[in-house]
Image (tube, rainbow, N blue to C red; front, side):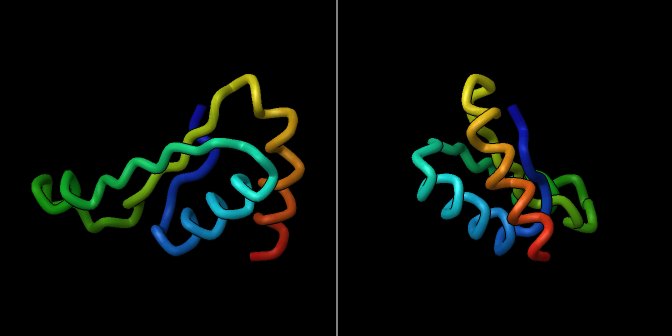
Length: 68
């Protein structure tokens, strides 16, 4: 399930926090699609986790968003 979409810097920071908590992540970088489609690149990276891990990930994600 997608838990974040936005800049690569923020996605990488959240990925590190989730992995520190033992939650595997998958980062999908859409920069190339944005270039091809002529997009402004406002949503360049998406971060995904296994849906079954959401209960464990939610506090980490919430804490990360509150610290922004």
